[in-house]
Length: 385
Image (cartoon, rainbow, N blue to C red; front, side, top):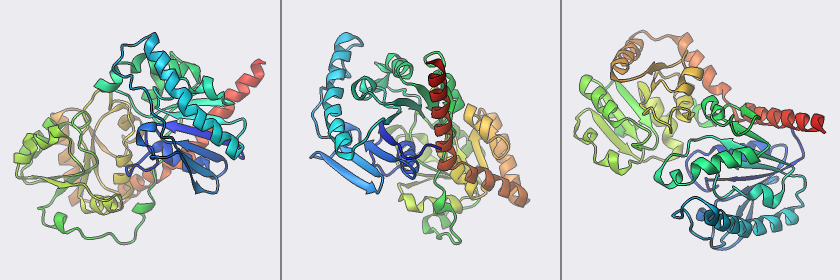
């Protein structure tokens, strides 16, 4: 365990975002035994420069500096020159705070931030640097520069860490020190003795197969959901969360046994999951999803729910014994039938095994593996001197 040290965390997610954030949860866990400065991404900052103290050993830095907009540029020297200029502006603020807080020999933790933190290691010269890969950056915005930048930032850092074996393995050509550190999930809200009764769910015919999360078409299989609903008209398929344009315009809204309940407060999510008979995660299989870690599956399992999900690499590696995994509509229909059959013949031991698996995925365990990886590389570095 690393104690009494200083950490600087940069990433893509603002401290003030309401959705779950690995970087934010990691920062909180590290701050239990170290000091942490969490640098907000510059597109989500306050109007004025500000350092906020969140706890005795955790601070958040907002930086209002204006930056060059460069993503439209072709990949190359001009792009790198302007990107470095942007980072220099940001690092001036970081240096001021480092001096104010008297940080020294600090660790740098970069959360998937391949653009805005590409040059930060050279600029702030940390004692140790980590590139944390929790997602595959695949979109028109990222595709212009991401391929080169991610390999470069992985090679620069002392090690690469990932919450997914698949995502980590993809970086081994760029850095020999790659560590799988697992995934933590805050399940404190799922330990309630009594869950709320939801009027909008109670009106829906059972059995209910439910999903909670952002409804985005590049991650979820709209066609698969529609096929399942048409093939199982006596089953209600519930979707809770904000929709992207493709979901809003999809055929799902025309199906009588598909229900959209809209966005809900994060505190209500456990109540919604508890109200479902079966939970599902109908992901598409693509570069974005094949290696990602679906935190919602732990949330589903923490309540002992049968879970129907696409058989991604992570699902096969971690959840195969506790979930119904399927690849394609034929397998989905078969696995859904098995999950429905389980509702008639409950298995308390299976439900308990699901809960135990979910609650074993703690941030204490994940950050412990981060510490182990750091110590391993430092030991190698010292031995090579």
